[in-house]
Image (cartoon, rainbow, N blue to C red):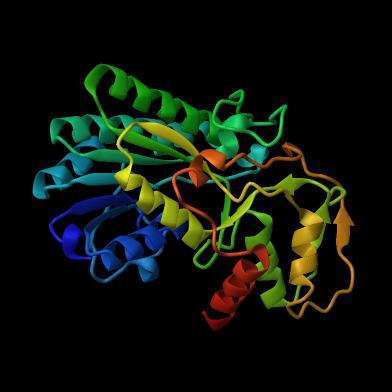
Length: 310
């Protein structure tokens, strides 16, 4: 696959969870990869040794401009972000820097340097508590978290830069991504939390009834679609998930097969700010010929194995 040998991809957040997997895949596909990461949540041990690394913040305009000046970049993957699904611990100003300001800076630089494509890692958090499920790309946008508000605002700016200046973009609304390298701290999702608890032999807790459903997708499937989107000619928005509702009880039942000592889950009151049920319609993504390959059980097993070995 030498057709990509002379192409350069910039990956923001390339030392983070999804970004590092994406960087690995691009290098495997013979792209030259430039990574920007401030290492606030990313880690140097996720860094592919074949990538060119710049430590800094993607919302620092002069810093990012210097990176663009030093390389002939063809594609930008904006993966840098900070996720916190606890409404009581969000930092709106940080979210604006992380998602909105950084997107505007990158979009301007893409136009200045005639970059082929801007691929933005958005989130299904833009839908909030969706009234109709599964949510498709035309469903009502009503985010309830600062994180989702900032992602949607960034999306609007990309459409602005496309409509007025011809920026070519892909907006990818990731569902609940899980897998190796996902940080096991904070409020990052039940699979990451359960993995940590399993390894520490702590009890696995279900908040609320355990009936709340999410759309879980393994990281390699997300990377597959993200790379596939390079070839899309028109600027588009896609949900990137499995399209299957999985409850917290379902997740607990999978973990119960992998060596936890407790026979039943420990139930505690539902936490403030929960969105209830959510899963997305991924028929638009599937129509491109992409499909998911890793089941929930297989993905959880891979995740547990990775962190145990680590």
